[in-house]
Length: 289
Image 1: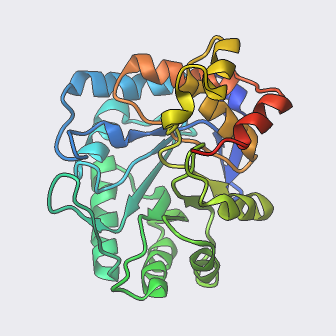
Image 2: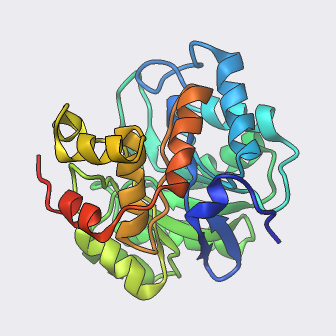
């Protein structure tokens, strides 16, 4: 049973795969690396403090990937938080090679995914990954072959639940013919709603939708804009309002805002307690870049 925590508990809960209940405001650890998502963070002690503060705030869902660093991100999580508290869920991903900073090469070969998973288990000090996600389809590998590789690892007891990232509705449907899928992680925010159909599919079918890059607001947050005006009315930062909008957009939504500082972590976490009026929600929904 999850202990009530302030303020994250106010975000409500979501259940992954019928047996993993988490609060609906998680943490994305990607920014706890060096520039270009490469190498260690500029301030390792602050990165460790961010992870520990996240748990203190009640966050019990953290998203990472073997490619963040690469490897560095998972190692930091284990260093900061192992042994993990009861009910704590770590989601990680495999499916990219990283030849250098800001370079991402899809690799969905079954052998690569098996090796990636084994590496994640070792770095995170786990015997099983609660949520393991295919980071992206590899156009050079049959999509079903990548999904089947994860299905076999699930059968072997090394994965509890399988998720997908950076997929379209057709790919989600194809994957679900192979193995149960519990989540989709796609880019989605006030500026980019290309995955609107996937949000609705996830809500309809009881899957989690995990928006990456959830805080993008860009010009929508300029002074005097509707987002800025609503933020001022709530005595909140525009990022808090952007997150609050996501939480109200769908009960399937599980935002994972990331940051490299404790200050911004606490600011983002306050979004769990922010409630927009229906008028405010619709005004933001009507915005376009």
